[in-house]
Image (cartoon, rainbow, N blue to C red):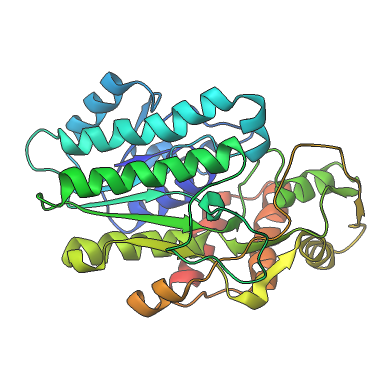
Length: 339
């Protein structure tokens, strides 16, 4: 059971799961952008798609009980920092009460409850001191803006349900705090790589708001692979359940300006970027994750460095702008990664 299946990461995840034989039910609002990967990749053919609001407990429980899932991946969210300043109430209702509603479905499940649940949050859940070293899983949770803070609350809700209800049941629960994700098919506003691709499609300069901001950028397949590792391993062995950072190595935590430069070099032709602040709301300047825990517990290492992650995104985006069959491109990138 995948919430947020019509989104960027949800669409990639559902296609991977279906490709390798899973029976998938997705629950989400309609795809949040136009165009969107859900329609481009025809994800509705891969899954039983239920269009609904995560805030609607009755509709969510009906879909959940009908699916009777063994595994739950919770991706549904209002995911944009700037949008959270515009509509904080909706952000909290979706990200906090949406998590409560889903965990209530797990708690009240008809029949056998799911055996493995992962709540996908964000690297922004931590109280950001603008440190030069990465945050660890035992650092304080206190996101600054409404989006980040709502995800901190989502973590705390998950901790409470785990301690209060799931310790006595055979339900393994983890959260995964992923860094900034890039990849083909992201059409969201106010994200650097989609902004770059849109500028190239319009043959315009790329405008970078905060070129000195440092973020842990990673290709979308990296965290998705980790989510699948977590749900599989804790399905088999509950002792590995917990709270995990998922991000790139330190050398791949780069400034937004460096990322834009790599994009321009790989895109070629007329690509260039300019720095232009827009006086928007507060955004963190420095953010890194310490991923020692997941590397130790799961033996995981990132497959792609930041340049290769951008290269895969450029490959996908150029193919899309050229009108190619995108399912073939996605399948090729998935198999290259998993091999």
